[in-house]
Each structure stands twice: as C-alpha cells, then as structure tokens.
Length: 579
Image (cartoon, rainbow, N blue to C red):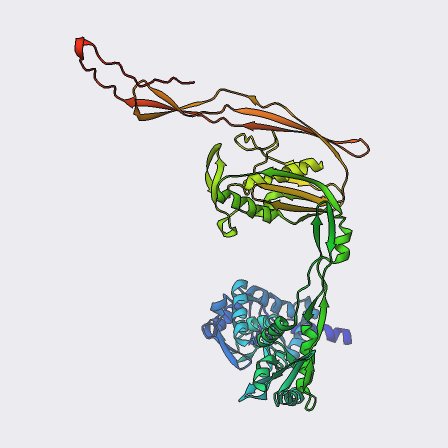
C-alpha cells in the first residue's frame, strides 16, 4: 500500500517534462512552469531592462560605475535554462518527488557570463591603479631643527583575482545594489610608538658639539654640521645612522688630511744590474668604523669624543711581489741613432717615455699600440716628417717608428717570438737591413710574446742623438744568429715629369733622383743554452720605389736674330737628358 501510495504521489507531481519545475529560479527570477522558450524570453526581457544601468562597485573608499556593455558581458542563457530543466528532470515518479522537493525548498540557477577577457583585465588594472596604495611606515623628520615622529599609514591592495568573478556576477545579475570588492590591507610595519625611543636618541645627538680625533689631531663638529650627516629612520628603518651625501663629503675631506697612498715596489737599474725598490704601505681612513664611532659619541650625553680609525693600506705590488717577478738582469738591449728636426726628436722622447717601465708578464703578447695608445696632440705629439702612403710628408707623431724599430730589435736580440711586425713603406738606410718596424695606430702594430717564464721590464734611455731600449728579467742566455739577404732592386725607377716654365722646350733637368723598388729578408735562428733550436723565422721586407722627378721645359725658344755676315747666334743653354 505504501509503494502504491508513493507511485500515486510521484505521478501526481511529475508534471510535464517540457516545462521547468515549479520552485526553480534563474538569478532570482522565477521560471517555474515555463517552457524553455518562455523562460528565455522572460530572462532576456528582464536583463534588457537593467543592462543599460551601470553597477556601482566600492573598494577602499572609492566608487566605480561599470555597465555590462563596457566589458562586453552577456549571460549564457542556454546553459542557465538547461541547468534549470535538469533540476526537475527524471522519469515518472522520480521526477515527481524531485519536483515536490523543489516546491518546498526551491533551487536558484546562477547565470554564467560571457565576457571580453581583455576588457576585464584592463578594467581590473584600472581599478587597481586607483585603489592600490603602499603602506607608509612611521618615520622621523626634522622640524625647526628638532626630530619629530611622523605617523605611518596603512596601505591597500585590490584583490583582482577575487574581484573579477564578483564584477561579472553583478553585471549579469538583476540586483542593482552597490557591490563591495575585496581589498587586502597592507599594514604598517614600523609604528610611531616604535620610534619614540629613537626620537630621544636623535635629540641627544643634536644637543651639543662632538669632538673628532685622529691621533693628536682634533676637530669640532657643531650640531648644525652634524644635522645633515645624521640619517633619521625612514622607509621601514628604526635606527639612526651617520650616512648620506653630507657624511660622504665630510669623511672624504678627512681622508685627504690623514690618508697617504701606498707606493708600489719598483725596480732600479744600474748598468746590467737590477734591484728592487721596496714598497711602502699607506694609511686610509676606515670610514665604516669611523662613522660608528661618530654616532656613538653623538648618542652619548657625557663622552662626546669620537676617536676615528685609520687602517694600513698595502701596495698593489709589494716588495715580495716584485722579487718574485724574477727581474734580475739584462735579457737584451738595442740602440739606434737619430737626428732630424726638433719636433721629430721631441716625438721620439715622448713615445719613449710612454713605453718606458713597461712590465710584461709571462706569456703576454705585448702590443706597442696598446702601450702607447693613439698618438695625439693632447699627449704632446708634434708635427714632424713621416712616411704616408709611400711618400715622405708631415704628420702628427713623426719619429714614433724610431722607437718601434728599436723595441723590435731589442726583442729580436732577446730571441722572443715576434708575432706582428711591418716594414716601412720606404727603405731607411740607418736602420739594420731588413730589421725596421713601422707602426700606425690602431691598424699597424708591433707585438712580441714574453716566453721567458718570468716578467720582463722594459726601459728606454734617450740622449740627444740616440735611443736605447733594454729588456730586463731573468737572463735566458739564448743564442741568436741572424742573416740578412742583400737588398735587391725589384723593378725600374719610375719617372715623374713636371712641367717647368723656366726651361726652354726640349730641355730637361733632374730635380730629385729616384729609388727603385727594393726587397730583402732576414732569417733569425734562436738557440737555447743547450744548443736546441727554438725558433727559425724569416722576415721579408718589400720597399716601394721613389720616382725620379724630371723637370721638362715649356718655355718657347727665342726667334733667331740676323747678325753680321748673315750668321745667327748659337744658344749656350745646356740641354740635359733623362738619366
């Protein structure tokens, strides 16, 4: 009987499957007993009546009005109606019992929004720019020369992750009341109460002068001088410090009075001997320790004397470092002689000083251009004769190649590997045959490698007519043998004809005798003390020609004049021919 009764009740409330069960609502709108089409029409009509009206959202005291159209929000009607139908679905008596329960307890279906996601992200970022405020911790400030506590302020941050769904739900709903968005509070980390003891410390620090001492020297700091050097707590700090630009400037001034720079160990040469000139330590102000001492004195109401700290500063190259470099005697040397105009001699002296006292570490590929840099007027170089594109001209730094050639020959005689060398464009007779070396910053360089296993120390010695370059280090006692091939002509002397209006037509005159193109080579063999051949190198040198300048007359010959007996005078101007 109970089963039969249950069937009767189930069938009695089963209703039509084509209609939504009574007691079902969508976003609070009753759609019970409606067909899906009727429910959709009802919901769309209701939404169209509220859609133009913006919803007000509040956060941290700010209000924002947003309408569904601004974000492209539309409810998903199909999904909502399908869910409403499923609430009272089922077969026969099962559907009846489900619908009976809905009559008593009801069921509300939540609308799912469709949204233009990029618009929602932009809107959330816009709201966050207004709402988000970082907290401000309590701090100390000077007002009228006295430290006062500035209270802090809590900050706020919009919870954009949680706010997005709330905004969408409100825009597809039918309730138009204000919607509060979630905000996270950014609390104050340093309170005013925490800074009250620090305020008292700051008042003590600025209450009287402080005496600063270093050894027997003493200086007095007044409160007015100390004020800009005292860094008050700010941005979450809770302590006083001696810091900032004014403190940096003060300690920089003290450093100049008490500091002495260390002196590196150097080398003194005398003939073939070398000795190490010991290094000397310097003194430096310990700024960190001195700042702490100054603050401690300022915070003391009684003992207001700050004893600053000075520390010893070691040289970069100590005496022990210099001795370990193995610079003991002469490895090789070479001397060349020079002359010329005063500007050229000046340039030789200038560049010789730039490469003087060069320290070349083991394995280093030493560069002449790297040591001297660009030859400029700012470095003291003057205009002097120089070879440019195979012609003698005038240029800044003429005479530099005198030094590069001398350095090349010093490395040559030391038996060092020479990795880059270029001969002059024109043959220069006062250099060893085939052993000249030109340079031009930055593309033409002279390079050699220190393969001795110890440091090399280059010294240059300039007299009024000579330059000597000596390499000091640990003598390796290499034997160097070199052979130069004869200088041979590799072509004819070119002739350059120049018109001369002072010579008669048909006359020629040699103004400058030219030189043919020439070539030579030098072979160098380097032997170890044991007799083992270490290097066998050949340097080839090709020199350009210099043309013979031939003057060619262009002056018209004079007309003949009739003399006595009808004879014409004979010209006595000699005529020369091209050699």
